[in-house]
Length: 459
Ligand SMILES: CC(C)(COP(=O)(O)OP(=O)(O)OC[C@H]1O[C@@H](n2cnc3c(N)ncnc32)[C@H](O)[C@@H]1OP(=O)(O)O)[C@@H](O)C(=O)NCCC(=O)NCCS
Image (cartoon, rainbow, N blue to C red; front, side, top):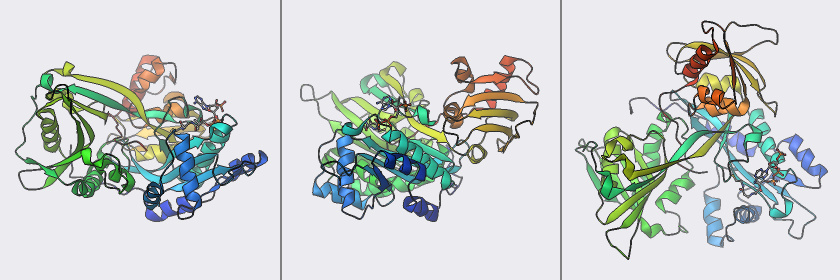
């Protein structure tokens, strides 16, 4: 891990504000209006936001929000573009039948750039109005609104894996959930010289965003974390539940610089006090020493038999820091979904695993990104991309793929060769690659990346 690079700036504040305040998509508004529904933005500061929040809670099977919870969420929601669909014929016309919150965020991509990306969240449709195309209208609407605002990517995390492929999203950064038997693991990793200390949760709340801003560009898939999420991790909102269970520690290196922090909770085992469990809510390390020191601290806690953590990368060095790898049960699940909206901007922002030329023949059911594009990756990993004319022939490997498959490969989380074997992508020889297998290998090397993408939050 290197921290010598300066994190590249992502989306600017004026672009974020413009997207937040921008209109809903006219095509979707007209489609919903034809069915008697009113699709519009919702003002966070106004009373209508409270009803919108109650609709989100109901959609996710939560209980009703209290006044205090609403006030707390409202205070932390200023960054969101909030939209709802209303049914004026219903007995509660002030409560939306469908909700979405989105915002212009930054997505870290292979090579360390931060690309502006439309984050989509709080997607609900009331069970009374399901399966009438309302979610489709809103999602297509947000994607078109993002395109109109010049945003090249969209991203989301999901409740169900089957919902978003139809809109061109694909799982691009999986998450690895770990359960580690601590007594069995055996620490064989480094033992850095710095120190671990407990800190107040409020101090962790201040520290985590600062550390995260220093390193997030180094891991493809990470995003700029909204402040409300840090409050939730640290339990620092007035309405935080079980905040007292959370413990926070920091790692300070030998030179006195704080380089990492972790927030975790312990669950005591009353039947056997030596078998308590620890769940790690967030662990952030600015360098390899901080990473080793924090994990060692957690795995060597007395009276703890199991440590769990659920938003880790599939290539965690931690696996190579324990003597018994079978002490860790790792399960991998789709997590960060992305959707390329602007092929040229998206592909020119990331770096590539090898030099080469590829024709990408992209199909997009929503028509946002359909076309043939020439990608030329240089020796330093930089890529140039241009749309090809209809009849323009290029002697290069041709990759025929849908927008979801292009999005799946975008963060380097899946090899193109895997998608070819899965029948999701077709590759034809060209240029120096004269056989199919050479073409697949060449295209996979170009589009690949040397570290796995990861996203450490849900949104
Ligand atoms: C998921 C949800 C938003 C769908 O809303 P909806 O208005 O019923 O969806 P639509 O009628 O617009 O359906 C759009 C498409 O998605 C499909 N679809 C909808 N819900 C689905 C589900 N749960 N599983 C698989 N497909 C689903 C529909 O069949 C339809 O397919 P098609 O247009 O390709 O033929 C809604 O059921 C809901 O609020 N669920 C609970 C909250 C939740 O899980 N939200 C998602 C958070 S990530």
